[in-house]
Length: 311
Image (cartoon, rainbow, N blue to C red; front, side):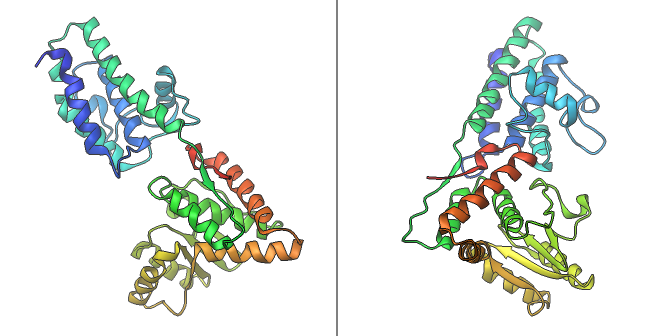
């Protein structure tokens, strides 16, 4: 193999191995850029040069990360503010392993090596640009269908893209519209309850709301912790996940003490109630909720393709 072909030969299968349902996560694209930037500045590298004591790729957070993206023409505000997933750091180590931590590039003269690595980074920059150019989610509010059907179509379109962010921010926007005199907190979708000191995604009075696209035992255990703290847990999941959530709650012996509601019904009921109270069309109430949703999304997330438009 020609030494100058090494990165191209290794990068393509690495990218394919990182795909999930045909997509490559932003965190993985970003970690590939950070790894190759390390090799561009120093090649080969030692593990201590690139890995932190916790096994994370150095330069994956904060100003250093944002400067790296900016150096290659990527606006981190629209793409990614920092690498947040453990999987991305593991993906980065796999890429370093594939390149033998730069040993496979040793035989390439310095100017040519820089050009080869820059070309590989360019491939990842292209992937990053595809992310930032993705179209917004769209909902068609056909008057023949119910508000619950409208919300269901949003959740269907968001599958494989949102990682639960759409669900969380829709519920946050609905609570904000329903309770204008109460401050509804707004956190990024990846911010864990323990990390932020929260009892759940949203707490209003003595009610604690948990929002998830894929319910599991962890979220039900949080509901049990709410009960111990004298909070009433409400678990909000997509309609097709409600039975699964109930079964898990039964296994944890709290099925009769937790309220489990489909996200579609939770938001639709309020659209109907608020529309009636304000004497306006359902679509106008939904438009107000989506305006709040888009504003909340802009405040804490980086993937603006998750914004929602009515078409």
